[in-house]
Image 1 (tube, rainbow, N blue to C red):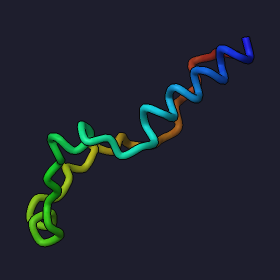
Image 2: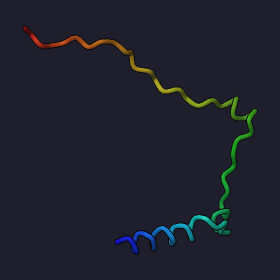
Image 3: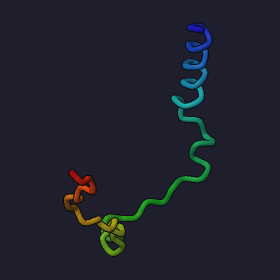
Image 4: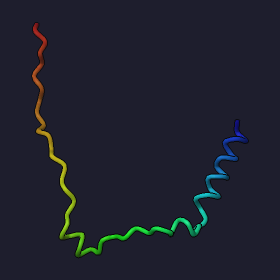
Length: 58
């Protein structure tokens, strides 16, 4: 089991660590800082925080 795990780690490292040319075939274009300020990220709506009333009757 340990040998199979080690082989998987080595294989994964050989695939991901070197700078292979196919990783750069379709590079991402990032926004410039000024352009990013014009298009801010949408904010997630915040749910109101409050205590829930207990429904237990004594």
